[in-house]
Image (cartoon, one colour):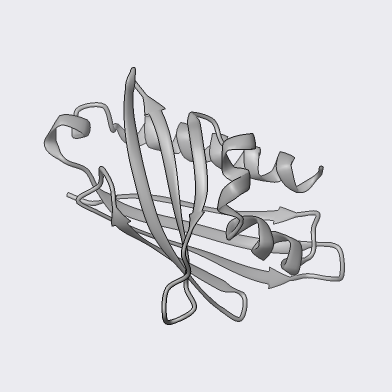
Length: 141
């Protein structure tokens, strides 16, 4: 069974700054809760950004590798390796004016059995909101 997290939020930042942060894998360890390591991997032949994030969750370490494909103001993220059975996410940006951007974020994923028991929708929503808040705080720096 797939799980989903969706949120829309208006950020006080232009779309270029937001796109840069989404694809700046090196920065994630500086602000993302639970992220121990983050690094950019060699670019893909199709120009996609690729990165590696290492998380600590429930006293266990998980490595997540993803491909980020950016087209105009949309970033699609696909897990290439990691703890999920599958993971797909998208960031869709809509400039409101030169200083504000509406961001629609959606993640859909399936977890292996040993993680499903911890993945109640309320916990997924809490973690997702923490991620969005941390992202927003980083944009303000």
